[in-house]
Length: 400
Image 1 (cartoon, rainbow, N blue to C red):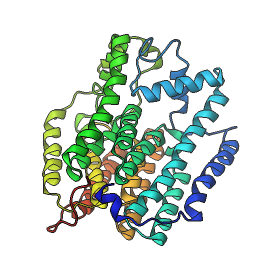
Image 2 (spheres, rainbow, N blue to C red):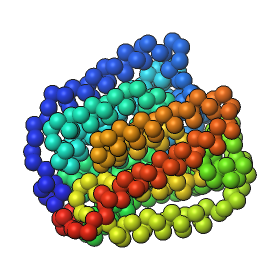
Image 3 (cartoon, helix red, strand yellow):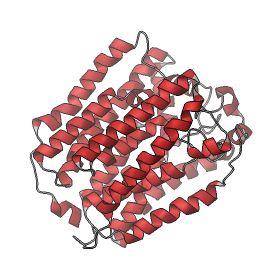
């Protein structure tokens, strides 16, 4: 048992918190039936997922994938179960995303209790999160609800004092889509060294073992997969505007994924400002905040994860609209109520304006408007999180 878990008093799960995930799943099934004949795919990547899964052979063996193994193998398994029928593929994958989002709703409620929001506040924030996921199209257009729920599971089990479970969920999250690794700086700062080493060893160990097996069995395609994301040119960020890359984050054609060398083909203008130089700046800011953080409580831990994620997005050469799904729960679990509503609505609005409103109509000049606004929102979030993690008075000791 750790210090975080000692702060929360046992509460009976309210009917609302138990009901919302069930309602979410039921609503999404009705949603699928309503949209499937015409426009379930919308402006998302379901067609890309199907086309990728339909490629002959196995991911990392016969072709490379830009994502970590859980994504590539999951869509391949879904393709096998659907026997190549796209209707069944869409339904099964849509169902997997729905279950992941429903679990996220439950986890947000449970984490809210651990953060001592109180029964009424917990129900209110959980209800808002339910509404966000129910009506945000990125939750059924893209794969990201799965790594988001894995990230939330890692946070939940850490706050419960179950370090091994937290490490396992974190490792699975990293294998789904690298991003959950953003939790590690917060784990380092807000746990004892022994706990940090245990969680890191489990999470990184799982990641290394899985990637290592792929590298041993199929070094060429696996190495191409690992190189594919870092080799991309900038898109939809301030760095893309500086580089003159007025493009979306669309990846390479499917037929080129059988060529390992295609993973590193230049497909846009090179970076005017090297990524390593901007990493030094934003990494330095993050390190300064990390070292100054003194307010050692559960909310500060989640706030530090939010700061790390926002700094990463400011540094990242690229931006994809579905990444706001990682920010939603971190904002909901830490901000004061009015600030929470302001940032959730503003972030959702500017992202929807960017994609699909502007970019699907090839209005790329609109990036000169939405990118600076998004940057200001991210900076504003960091300024909201800093008082949560930095305080002149220590409140409790480390987690464990």
